[in-house]
Image (cartoon, rainbow, N blue to C red; front, side):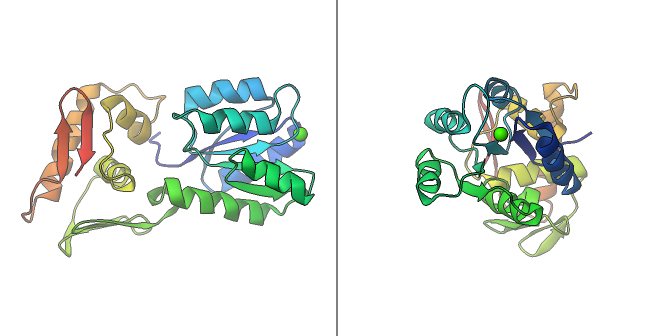
Length: 229
Ligand code: CA
């Protein structure tokens, strides 16, 4: 199964609440991994690298606040949006929640629809193509909703893998992606694919992008991987 769905990590110790969250997030098309305590959550963050974390405040062991603080002080995880859940609604708690670096805050009991809207809102910043945004890079336009790509207003034909590669690049122009990172993002980490496969699809993407002329926008970074621009 190819992975173009964002991964959400749900950290909640109450099984019933965890199930409700998982069910609703999966219904929205997200991949969901879940943890029942802080230790497991920190291990999963390192292993799965989720696109967003829904984090309960009150957990046994390491609290949600402490987990959030740790994630936000490490450069590898600081960019992952954290949506904090709490049963306490006092203003002071809200402030503390945001001071730990949480990106958003929802008070229990919450409406599932509101929570989903907040999750999508956070993902719009970090995975715009994955939530159906239109991306632009120079004369290239990628519409994630309709799966259409144009360059200089001319439509381009891309295979599904090339489309996912291009949306990954266009979400973060300039970022250098290693073959391993591209395999995880585009093919999914459960699939065994030779890293040379990445080169083959990059070659196809380049050909498609330059079909009607224009410079090759993809850059090969020797020993590191590929980047857009
Ligand atoms: Ca709890």
